[in-house]
Length: 324
Image 1 (spheres, helix red, strand yellow):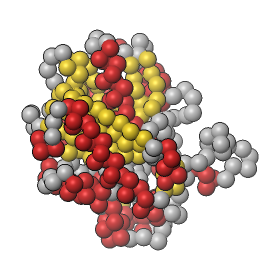
Image 2 (cartoon, helix red, strand yellow):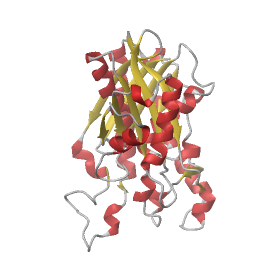
Image 3 (tube, one colour):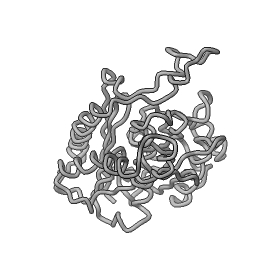
Image 4 (cartoon, helix red, strand yellow):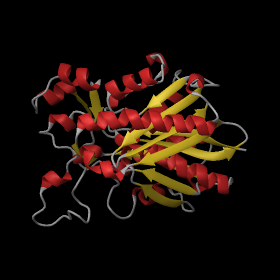
């Protein structure tokens, strides 16, 4: 029996905002954004659209592809920092909407790393109890935390949610290893200050505290360093080397970071999955959305050794190795 990925799914808002659309509301242009980020468009939730509107269809796709139904789920792990509301958790909301009545549900707040953190937790639960069926979700409605007058952050992000069902089986897409890491001392490089107990919402709440703040140059440096380090740890745990990796599914934060990562691992770009041009950075959604698109295209083939790696606010980072 191995811990395997049984099925994947993803969903995003129908509303697509292009770089040319952003030119109309801020001091930027398509060439500037593409050169610095690789992003051409992103999905942005409309007013009233929320996390569960996309988490539920993503989960339903993953369940259908796994051959399971919601009633089969024993656990739901949601990697998100933008649930529908502060309480109940996003995972509990999804549980109710799916009708997964017997599932234990909880959120994981690790910013962009949330999905692979969820895989790590699922992997360990399954090692204790192989009978479990676990739904791991990752995604955000991050646009609600963007200052549309700030071109340094607003052009980078988008909204999407992905999901995967994980269980113990004799065959399947085998989860060989998952490794994680964090450094809270670097939390001021990428953060949202407001709505927590430090800066609660009052009648005098400053809306600026609701927006993502980021020190991009410092993030770039720590992203490369920690994604490489945690990837090497995951490969060592799996008993594999980077030379054996045939496909990489990286965090979709910036095309320059993706290209630098490929260079560090000495991999051609045709072995690296990229969808940042169509989605932007969807935070915890980048890895599961990319995994779902890769799994349901000709990018992944049987026998591939797949490395997934990510970094996010916290700072957090994680990597997973899958034998496809």
